[in-house]
Length: 193
Image (spheres, one colour):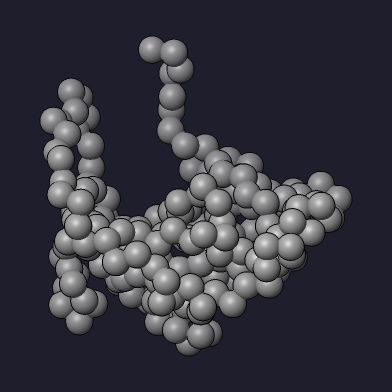
């Protein structure tokens, strides 16, 4: 063993407009700022799990002027997140071409009912939903995917399969198709279990 890994601690992302991103994570994902560095860095935490949380779960950093210039040259400075809905691959979670190598950032919600409430809330504010609600094969968890203001895919997840306390279990090999990513084909077929 090289690293005694205790689990994922936090994620750091660069954004086009830090104030817009802070507002999104506050208003949509119920996070709060725990500290800031000038006008260019914000540390966010989830107050509803304060007893288990540390200082921050996210670090959001404003892109530099040079980075913003590159995005402008590529035509990616201004995003209409609804434009990407038709371009998403059919056989997996959403991966937007403008966000680089981050596949998605997942946040746990208590249960399927909370995930459905989040779906309704996002629809009320006309925020795009890229996938879900659905249920993954691997992990057996419920999911809902939507973008943050910079197009980073956000996943809400609930009821992830528990890992055995000791010894683990043999890994399964799933087929690469849309039914592996979503064992349900449409939200009208979903039932809370």
